[in-house]
Length: 157
Image 1 (spheres, rainbow, N blue to C red):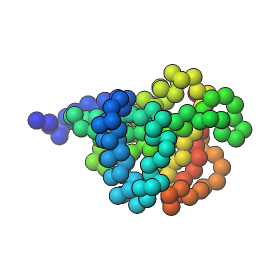
Image 2: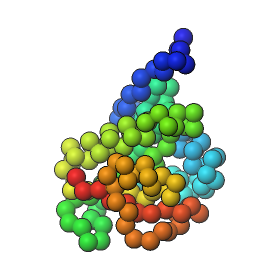
Image 3: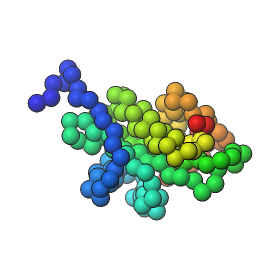
Image 4: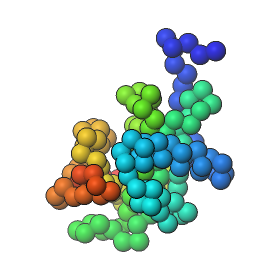
């Protein structure tokens, strides 16, 4: 039995089975499709099949997810190998507990193992400060993605 005074630790693990991928997709469905009204046809894409995915677990339950996709070419004005982090989602009850930062660190660690020079992501505007604290810099102008305002952000590794 868990004690609310002392929450159970959070662990981050690479998704290795189809069942774990379904857990990640279920979290994304709750956060993006149900909460943010992103159309399902946009939320799921061909990148899911080749991306590196992680899950955050607490007390044996999946509570967050994110993915790393290797880009075929660097963003404009950049050189080398770049990755894109995306589909970062944490269930509402677990936000503000540094789960997002743990997911991001895990994905960045994998990007480093793959020898990337930098990471690019599309941040929803409400999350800009979160990514700035993690060393990401805003690039360009605000754009719409799935009907939500975003800003490209980059971090060199």
